[in-house]
Length: 277
Length: 277
Image (cartoon, rainbow over all chains, first blue to last red; front, side, top):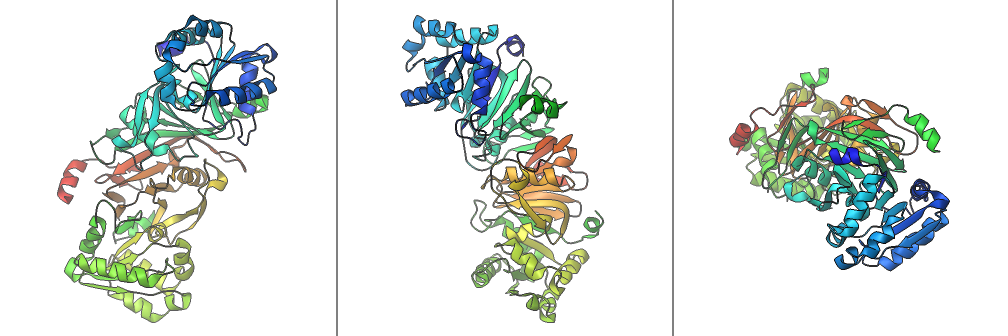
């Protein structure tokens, strides 16, 4: 948890579909506020998408419409681009960075280990930017991304994972969670890696991680699966996994959760909801 | 749990698709064995289906092929039929009763409170039959059936329930569980009714309940959700439910679970698997 404690920036990790959800654009509005509102300088990175120009334009217009002072896209399609001083320079003055959806493996393969990656890690550690991402842009923030696996049941083959860029260490993130019925693959993942806390984030829903706690925002819920509490885990090469005594929490907006303690921090959610409204 | 303790018959509660699953017909073979094999007298009740003749013929051939001495259908399409002495008489000599899939509400509306229902309850209490059911025929055995609700998220509106015929009291059963991604609706149901233990049974998978324990059979798993352990439950009229500290168990074949204690009884599953093989 050393990296966790050292992080000063808030992270906004969104489960997808935050532009047209029932909550309107409340999550993106919160991002703009956190980034400074009229004083915000936001960089949109659409590396995950094969149509970055479309998403850059859409998020540019949307974030500007929500009151962001300045929004620009940083087009990173290649590792060469991600290693250029220009990319690092573009990020230096940012108060917010937004990663769009797409394919999370595009983010890791294009950005992982580059100067842009290092610069982002430094900015987040120093607390000078708010880092936000949706869908693939959310998954890549975790220690371990879920890459695929929608076969039914809780099995070794039921989930494929890969290392994320670890802005939020110690967690394993899945997104579009309720909408795509993904609990089986999250259970499979935490059974294999019970040291990681499983977070399933619904669409139009986000966690705002600040220090060791996160708060849930949006219209859906965050499902936390903690297999660290499991009394028994058996993972056969083939066939279903045995997992007993795991803990599960379903946390809608206003709920807070303590990451290192792996427990809900429910004190006063009504008050906090009131403040947020 | 009084009714539970008084029950002497084993119950075989199947999550659906047990005729063409990867396990072949192992679950139905177990049913035939429990009912007495060559000495078995099995009654098939296809009331849940709108095409009872088709299912009666299919299960008749299948169970006979698996070695059942005698298999007959009991056609109950109306409450009048379910109240006739002939129906009660037909069940009197049975060693096994099998309920097919279809619509669980057809079972409760046609059979609930009839003489057939009373006769079945008595036979199960006395331990003279093995009662088996698949899909709708499984759901109706519970205290509370899940009737519908496939909207995403854990919400009050996300699940519709109704009382089952309560052969297995204290539990809430959902079926086709992993295959249809139904954990959200099971979580919704146990959040509303945490006194009921939630059981999600995969296809080609069953629980064999004998006394206060059940054992898992088949190629999938049974997901047990215990919201009795929850530290906090908040159910708004609209929007997502808060549920913290619930317990979840994923139990494949060979695992045993203690119903009243709400805990896995894992001692020696390897041995038991060996014995069953």
